[in-house]
Amino acid sequence: MKTIKILGTGCPNCKRTEAVVKTVVEELGLSINIEKVEDIQDIMAYDIMSTPAVVLDEKVVIKGRVPSFDEIKNLFVRL
Image (cartoon, rainbow, N blue to C red; front, side, top):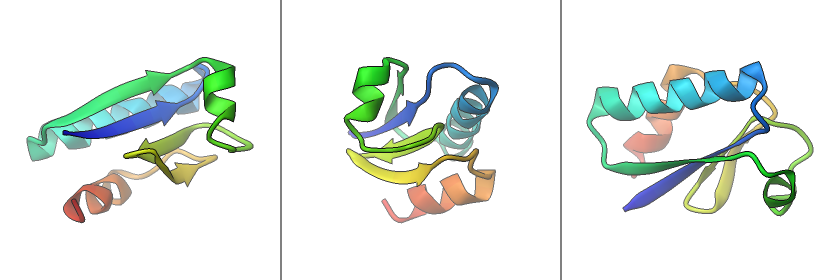
């Protein structure tokens, strides 16, 4: 099963990113494990400077901004 992680400490943009990801996963009917990572030490392990960030199978694919619905859909189309 694929895993997607949303990295962020709980700011409004992090919450919007989580909502976008969850909506797309539900809309497409995908079987993807979604994890929210809020611990700053765990976030720093991904070597990013700003949140929110989206990690797909341990690879940072989006960082420092809220992705659009279409952007997240395009990530999943490639799976």
